[in-house]
Every structure is written in C-alpha cells, then in structure tokens.
Image (cartoon, rainbow over all chains, first blue to last red; front, side, top):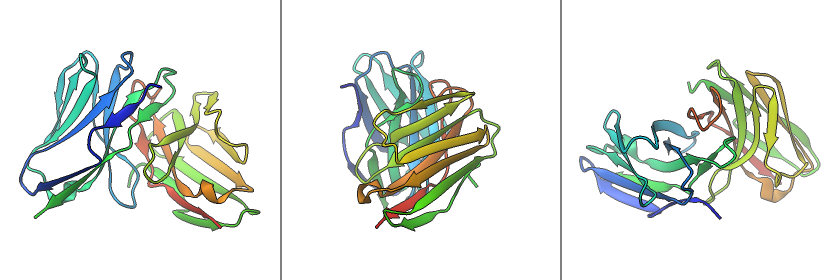
Length: 112
Length: 114
C-alpha cells in the first residue's frame, strides 16, 4: 500500500556538523509534507512544512527539500546542537485528506 | 506550553476499568484528532473531529469511544481495554483540514493496561 518511510532508523552526528534526514513517500498525489521533532516524553513538535509547488523551504537552521520526481523529502539541520537530539518524523497528507500519514521516524543523536 | 493540554500524563488501568483521557486546545483550531503511538510503529490515526463531522479509522476497536463536546475539548473514553492497547495516546488540533495546515500535538497520555 502507499506509505511514508524513512531511509535510516538512526543517525549519529557530531555537534556542529550538518544533519540530513531523508524520507521517501509513495503517494504521487500527496501535496503537503511536514517534518516533526519528538523529544523524549513529549508530543511531536512541528518543525517545517512544504507544499508540492515548492522544491525548497528554509526555516531557522532547517531546510526542507522536496524532489517530486523521485518522491523524496529531506530535512537538513545546520550546525546540529545537542538539543536537536530527538526522533524526527516526516508526514504527508493522506488520500482522504482527513489525516496525515506518518513515517516510523529517524532517531538523531548529537554527540559532543 | 504546547497549546494542546492532555490529562492525565500517565494512566495505569486494569482491563475491567473505565477511564477517560482529556484533551483541551487553546489555539482556536476547529479540528481535533486522537492518534495512537506504539513503539517502533508509525503514528496511527484513531479519530478526527473536523467542524461538525467525525471521521474514524475503521480498525479502531469499539472499546475506544471519542467525544467532542465543542471545538476546544476532546475526550477518549476507554473500557475493557487489552494489554496491547498500552501506548502513548496523542491529541492534536489543526485549523482546517490536516492537508492544509499542520497538526499541533499535546504531550500525550502514557497508558498502561495491566
């Protein structure tokens, strides 16, 4: 079935380096994508979103890239900090439009 | 403060108990959601209340019963649960449908069924 998936379950980076978290989706009709961050003991926190009429969108220290040709989404975090350690989820709007379809998540660990 | 408040944060209940989870959103949104988060699985949508329409995931057992008295409050009534229902239950809200605006989540209720 159609799904959202992540290439790597865990990612370890050194403090100060840039991080790239990848996500593949299979629904070619998806037109809205979101990245969430979930820290231990908390709910998912909105980071950044992008619509299918855009290829790139930048926020504070984060950039989301969308490649509709290969159905690929990535989240880039610049100058990764220890506070960035968390699980990151990508999500896309579902066929029904009622709810987001979430991936399993990538755990980002930032080491000093 | 996330703008979406869930109580209780933790709940332990036996399989014969009846309990309710509560969610309140302070964001002025008009749609509310219940999601289930189990270890190593994607978030699963359980129920959506958007304006006056309720949509549910048909795979959700009847032992889970939602209630949405107004656009700011959402409840999940639980009865005769099973151990496999142990999970983190997340409430979320959005302005409009989720294909147009992001969901804002609460910190969840960690439910343990014994």
